[in-house]
Image (cartoon, rainbow over all chains, first blue to last red; front, side, top):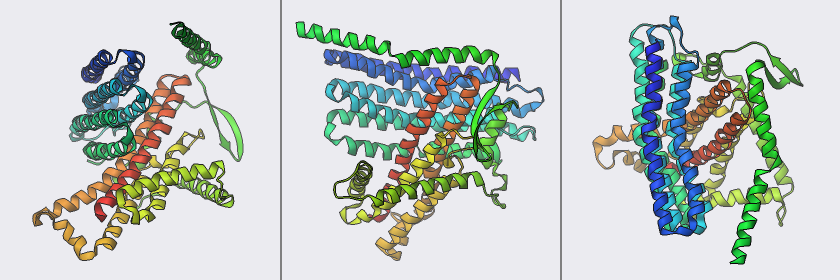
Length: 236
Length: 291
């Protein structure tokens, strides 16, 4: 039981901070390149970079919340049996792998926003707002992973036959790997949209509308994996 | 040079004035007091309506976190999926409240329609023209009769998402219950197929499923079903995830500031974004089916 808790917490923080660092570094690199191109915008560039990095890091903070909940949340129950072990380990895997993609995607959007800010310094307000919308869409997958992780810790059924234990680990793995690709894809959509806003600021509303539709369609596989995770937890 | 310097001075003065903002100071003092008090005082206050009166009561019973999450999540013990489902009356009640509010707003706005619009009227006209532009862009100018339907979906889902922020015990936003988004999704898909049949004729509509090759027929049918699932589970997962995150975090740290900010983010921002995404998806499904 304790081994499962500790391992789950380690996975939650460890794996999720890999890509958080990568995404933030990407944003910072583009910000520095943009300052080189337009030294006058360094103030608003710095602000934009910090906002973007804060949003990028939020998926890693989700991992930290789950790790703290696993370590100090009082979720250890000796009578829980193997199912509780599987649920705790699965929740760590879920949020750990599940926040790999959102961090990378948000970092890409932030980098592209910094690049566009160097190109269009007057549009900084609209660029930051659209960057935040794109990053919120990319972080939706992280919210799905967090939902599954919290339900695994707090609400998954306890005490059944041993066949269900692997189903709970499988739910964590399912939502973890299922959100990896869609979040990177949504990040690519949002990044290209912000980049295009930097090139054609007159077409902002058209670009944002198409960004909504494109990212919603590319996210549907993450939703299917969430449905399968629900089925694994409560029906199988 | 002097002008620049004075500008810089002004900016510095502004920043200093912002730092000394009394409201922020008050908030910080409030947060510190809350954190310090929360270690000793272990009871919580609850605001609400009891027998028609507004009461503030002390919650003595310590409910565990997992019970609270179960209460939010209880609608989906999917075991009796095909059996007789009990009606969740709290959701029906909240939906009725939203309906009455929307009807009241409609009547109040209708009553004072004028050539030179008042503030409320110009606000609604702004929303209407924004959506009509989008609809005409994607469906064509002669199809602008879809606009009221699209706006109805948007306003209904938006008010469903936002009403969960009202702090009354037992008040959940209706979109947290899977039945509401699934019902909306099925309704949207029904409208899509109905308008496709009306536009193309039945024969062409059936033929469209066997395109481009005949053996892709089952794949196309599964794709149509997946549309309804993806559009409804997206809304549901976001709103339920936000609610459970707020619940867990405000249980972990017992002070006021952070959960209020989270409520603003998940209730307002995610609520508006997801309502807009749902509407845009409904519109683009219709556009794909008609053209």
